[in-house]
Length: 317
Image (cartoon, helix red, strand yellow):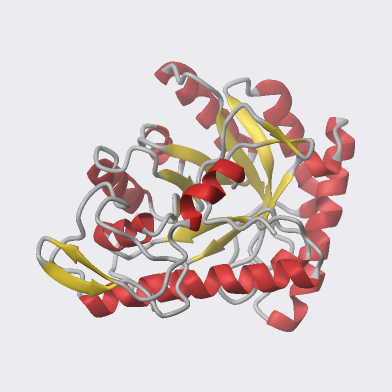
């Protein structure tokens, strides 16, 4: 079974009928196979840090990370991130095996409220895709890290305000905006991308509120086909990647919530005249990524299980 840290695949290659982009492929697996080692101790500026447990597949060396981990990251914090990432990957593999999947979803490590140095730790273990909910955090972390970590890729997954669109589009390493919930935001992104002269279309997803909760963002399922059609037909500087959702609050209901997104994808694909499998599904977070993996998610967004409990400072944008 192919495993995935969410690193970039070999762009331009074809594998299993799908373009090998943003996924694991044989060359990448070979590179990271060297990290499946027993316990080692690695040095960062003379300070030893336990990199992994005896079964760790997340061993990193000083050459793995394109930059050192700052002094504010303790060995305990570092070890916790490595172990958290290892645990998520193992659980994803188990869920995929149970459902006879040949490959894993993309793992987007959600680093909101966490420091850029903790992002470096996960990056050093092979993780490449990171998600942010707040524009200010996305901008600050991306600007701090992009010179040292040029292949880091960012997904914006939070609510979008029209006056923040230009800041989002200007983020170095921006790979995808997952939270488009209305045509106004899609049109705004299209306009700014055109003005900024992006070299290629920006990947986007339509966020769908499958649970119907007022507290959650996302368009209604019945609105998704027309919103997707608007993006596909009227926004040449955007590339519709697929659909995103936040599942139901009760984990026992997740299969129902995820089934609704699958149904929504079928309706969207019919409206666009494309195969359902050509549209990705971003579903599954810390509490339900295993169920999402079994249900066919192509991208999971996991935060606290990797980086630990979040603390929310006031007045974030």
